[in-house]
Length: 421
Image 1 (cartoon, helix red, strand yellow):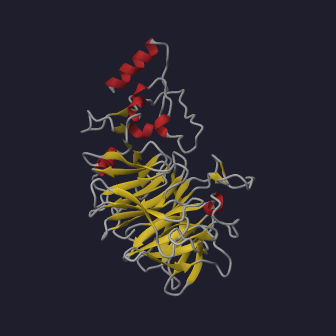
Image 2: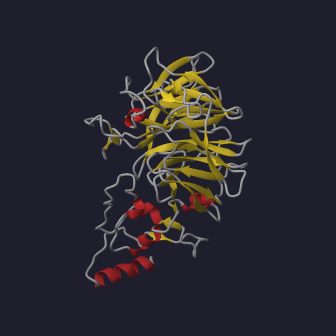
């Protein structure tokens, strides 16, 4: 109270009157991190800012809370070097631990997104993809060496334009977007592929097609997936394969499907999201989360433009929660409700932690949410992040992948990845 009163007296003395309810500083150092600039705490979610304030970054993927201009509150400068921004101190500080750190591990080609990172625990490697025209193999990070090494990774047969991946019962499951014939990167032989769900045995590097059509029509471009405790595969089918020119114009409206490997049945479970993207299920299997990246607008885009979408700031960028109900046909979802409106761009890759936290790659960082959509921590990478994965024996590290780099996040506290995810 004394601090706020002092500030008000100063503002009146200088001829500037602050809005009622503003209690500086908005940003401050966190308890236990007084001399560490990489961690900052936000008071009361910055719910009241002194006017004027503005976010004016023209790049939608980099228009971010941390770049909010607040001329009369110098505390916002604390965000400029912060990699860990805590919005809820009681839970957020427990999540980030006592020594959190973000390290840039690899520079990568900047003409492609990076997606589908999957950790193979027995081999201690991270396999990810570059869904891009003309790239017909994946990448592998060997975590057994110091420092880790990055190399090309080819499967047999190869799978083109993998955009989503999950680990389940010693296999990797991929959502692949491409439908064009492409050359085998090892032999040069032509390979024919349709968008679908593929299974990879990482011990033999062999792949198997699980589903590649809906009653004779091609899927659009499966984006991400999750396997539930019963072995059923839920995947989002959006339009991004067409956007990057690795498949033909979509036949279906964007939707989310359930595929049952036990029977071969493919069924739609959700078709109201503009562009369903990341997907995950709570540890107890009762809640499904799906992100919507409807900020990408495919209308009135010239076919020669790649990617074939424009940014629509009024498009959907929410994460939705659904109740999971069992049925004789497999799980279905109901009770759609928005729980998070991304404060920057939209959530791409989405994962749920062992503790039930919902994490989403959004713009230049990773949002860490409660199961109900409260923003607890923002891990700010500083460059665009497409997806990420928990790795390590305790699943207590996070590796993030983006168009221009790969980063490792270590030293975290009470947050761990699911064993099969």
